[in-house]
Image (cartoon, rainbow, N blue to C red):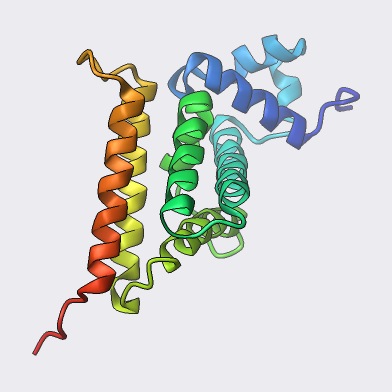
Length: 196
């Protein structure tokens, strides 16, 4: 009989919190069981194993990240929306590195996988920011990939403590977002002519 109060969602949330604290690569069923005050076999009544747990954490992470970006950008457009989205993603990655790592590494297992709509929601939130720049529709996917890669890279290096130069990291982040804002605005003003 499963322990009262434990559900797949509760086990996933506890696993996500633990991954944020110790790093996703150190997460184990044994450590999670210890955290929850149960024996390891009890967890298998709620999740199938470490792979299933990690995948559930990935779905949770993508859902939370999508909500964070959406909430930060509501009612904003253009550079204001870009700055809000960028900061929301940066905060999520640096404050929740374990769950973000799970979300970033996960791959959908099929069309019914809950990771698919969760990831789509996140990408939809970033796409909404980019729509404010009125880019050529053919370039939107390129802009989306650039924005996601840029934010992922900066926040991941920051979360790992990789910025060693004695310049304020917030200043560097603001400079980067401003550069992207100017680039997107310039691109929208001077679209690439069609290829012949």
